[in-house]
Structure formats: structure tokens, C-alpha cells
Length: 124
Image 1 (spheres, one colour):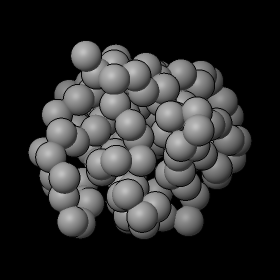
Image 2: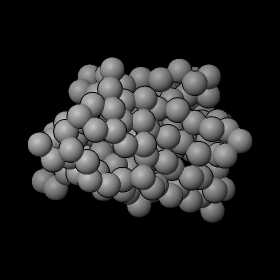
Image 3: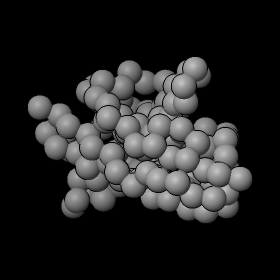
Image 4: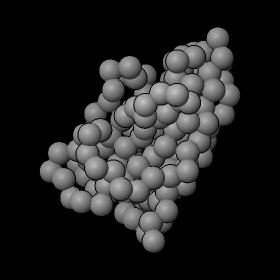
């Protein structure tokens, strides 16, 4: 049984930083595409960043240069380092993982497994 458990959310002021973690069980983080998404009430879910088995990464334009996705294979954990946070980054953040093996990872892939989400609030 796959479980993804996010942590690290919180409230920060604009310009601050947070690091989100996603601990995986029943799933090896280095074996497939994994990603971070976010969602605010009344809005569609937005892809934030993805990482493939070769640690190649892709980012949404809105977070490029500020967010970094990474993983620790030994800890079997996915991370999202968020710097230069803005009020518009306020959302519930979810980590996600695919079940299929893709040659190229993108935010449009079919992500099968999802965590419960962690809230990030950025005040101005």
C-alpha cells in the first residue's frame, strides 16, 4: 500500500522560506516521476514541480528560480524547498507519484498516488 505523507507547511511572511517534505512508504521515490501540486479553494489544481528518475526537474513558470524539488533516496523522501515566498503561493500543497514508468516526467502525467496535503500560508 502506497502512502505519501507531507509535512513542513506553515505560515510565513512574504520573502520567507519553507521546506516541504513528502515521506513515502510502499513506494520508492527514485523509481518513478514524482511531483508537487498545489490548490486553493475555488481554483484548479496547479502543478508546481516534477522530478524524474535521473533527477531532471521541471517547474511551473510561476515558481521557477524560487522553488527547488529534490529527493533523498536513502530517506525515501521528496522535498520542495520554497524561497522568496509570495502571498500568491498560499495553497494546500500535495505530493504525488505515478504508477507507470515514463521516459519523460511532466506535470501532465497521470499521477496515481497523492498525499493528504500540507497548508502553506504566506502573508504580505
